[in-house]
Length: 238
Image (cartoon, rainbow, N blue to C red; front, side):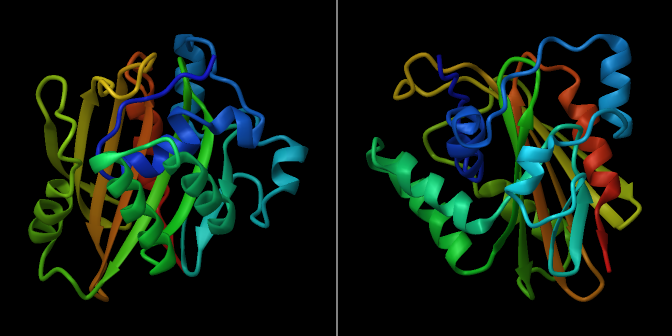
């Protein structure tokens, strides 16, 4: 059975390839609940890399997702999607949607076409397939607080966080950042859906670019925030 995660703005980008369709397009299954040792392995980026068949479907080196001069380390057994593959999944996914949900997917497609969305990756998490999406805005924000406020407001109008939103100012190797963690209930329009967990990071580079990276997994995966912390810490430019 397909397990559909709930949605929130760019999470709908993840929804087509993460919450609802990842297993179909990438041959991956939800991971079993992680043991403490497995959680530690995921958080440190050690463990099994993507399979040869998955790697063969991507032009990127296994274990690294990149676009232009920006990249990050993939969690074990994850793979990067090409933007062509990602866009095709969104187009397919939007066919069953109406109203604001379809409009949000259209925004996602536009974000790919404009070059704003640079990286999409999918892989197994505990409870459902997960996804990571990275977007770049150039010359839009005057400061990191302004960037974080703008991007965190870009949330879907048809979903609300399930519980408190945790926003934290942190420092990553790439520079200062703001981290936002939320869980969401599935919308009424997604029968059979499961609650989702989203972890977002916003950072602003010295050249004026704003990087927004968001990971999505099942809310039941309490190791995912540590996994995303490792991803965020690996963000780098060349």
